[in-house]
Image (tube, rainbow, N blue to C red; front, side):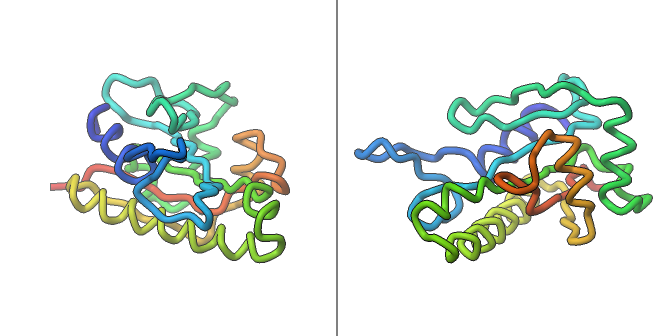
Amino acid sequence: MDKKTLSNLLYYTAGIKEKNSTQNANRFYPSAGSRYTLEIYPILFNIKGISSGLYHYYIKNHMLEALPNKSNFQSKSFSYFGDQAWVKNANLLLVVSAVFFSNKVKYNERGYRHVLTEVGSLIQNIYLTCTALNIGCCPTGGYKDDGYNSLLDLDGIEESVVGVIAVGEKKS
């Protein structure tokens, strides 16, 4: 997979499509009260022109921020996904986390349910964008939360992983 494909994937699934007059940024998926509680952490394995490693998608500038790589991050990433052999062919994993306070401050306990709707909408966008880019994707519900939280230095309470999606080029 090349940088342009990754860029398009990130932009059209989670990027800012426009800023409106109140300086709020509209994205390609809905969010209750435009709180946008989700963060995207691409774990790159095989992207032409970008080093393998742990990254954070900085949405405001449409950039990847390199995170400190941990030892064996690649094998740990596969293991936390469930050690399924096919995932080793993926070009990247998209790890999605939620910052729960952003919704809780406005919606109290209902904010958690809004996070679930938001992550479902984002994953739908990932499927649709991957289809348009002719690449494959597969989320799993069987990932190890604590493993990814630890790998990305998330506390698992204020911010925690809520979805993991393997993405890669389709075999011909």
